[in-house]
Image 1 (tube, rainbow, N blue to C red):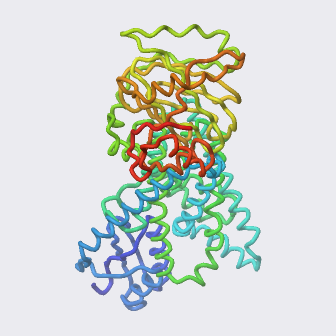
Image 2 (image 1 turned 135 degrees about the vertical axis):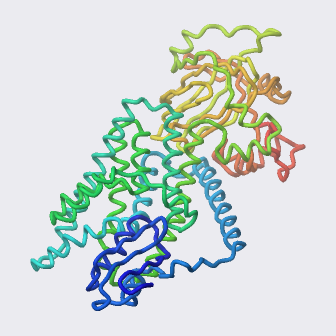
Image 3 (image 1 turned 60 degrees about the horizontal axis):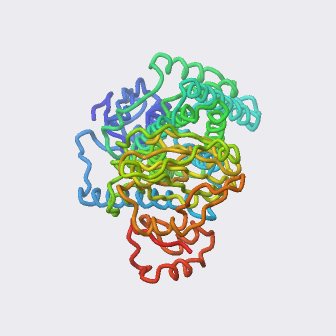
Length: 550
């Protein structure tokens, strides 16, 4: 460190907003001519007058903000083994959260996971992002707060105006992205891809907050630098809180905000995009509005601990978002599908990705379907018999949600919409090129699977899902159950076809109690299932095993 120029590293920088925090704190010292902080390298360079301030004063100013000052030649020390262990524990924890998230959203009795629940999660993300907003936008809040103080006014009204302007800006831009998504016509696969991209943005942002994987620090997507500087100058020069709030919507260097704009486009709806960004904007306000109080009550080191905790949660939310996006694409690479592939003896989920195009699908609700339906073609050595499967759609999901089908056999999928919600009101099966609305009452979807494998389908949000397991020949237990089972009546009273809902194929993680909840909505029915399968060992439920349902 030299007399009039000093350079050092400030460990603990979480984002590009930390550059502004350090520069503002050092610039307040007398005699400081120039200060430049660089987030990717954590390097801080200061030109100063040694007769007005000292190196110790500069170091102290940075450390008061919660950063640790070290010399440029000092290497970070830390056990590589400890970092590896932490990484393993972190990845295991994320996988555990994803597993329980997937299981929870399909269990009976779970809340209605529709747009409302998604908005709750987005609000939580905004709340966690609020700590990051303090670094990125805290200076703008202080600008109008200081102006109010000089005029002897309280800042309540200014805070309200700023919050209203910021939320209005986010909402309008969210609606714009949603409108763009509607014009582009997002398919289920594209919506899933949008979820994956948004989750990737969140993970990169969270890892940067945690200070992990230094190369990611250089990954930054935002406005062109001249436009970014112009906006910052206008916001700093203006003491009108509403105008500052409006301009915040264009500060897209924020990782979570980028993710939300991508998700808004993925909704394909201006209204849904607006609602999504409204929830996110409102979520960021509590921490940002209490910025002045927090700076007096919370130390810099505690603030950085809160940021690290928020970063870890954001990474988890990003991973969950990626997994849900993968479910929506029907690719078979979501966590539940991979677990099922590793334990099931049938072909792996990847084979469903190569699914050949199905025969054109049709939907015929109620009596109209039965009247216009042609007689199913008789079975022959070259053409398997047509099959009818029945499924109920309720608030808790699809029941049953797993079927065993024969390759080449035409399928009549009878769907009984009993409890329609904002999540289960649309079903997508990308591998079959199927996407249709679920109607109240009974409707029929027809298709023909042409290759063996696992065909995955889900609700349009990827929250509730199911699968068709396509095999060369149906198991004997399935054929026997179909022969014995009565045919469900159509709307006009005529039988549709033999139903296959009297059997169930065990999936990974199933228990008899869980199957009873899923099929009968009564956990006590597990005893009836056991009685219907005398040779069944409930402690050894293997995925792919077909059991009789009472």
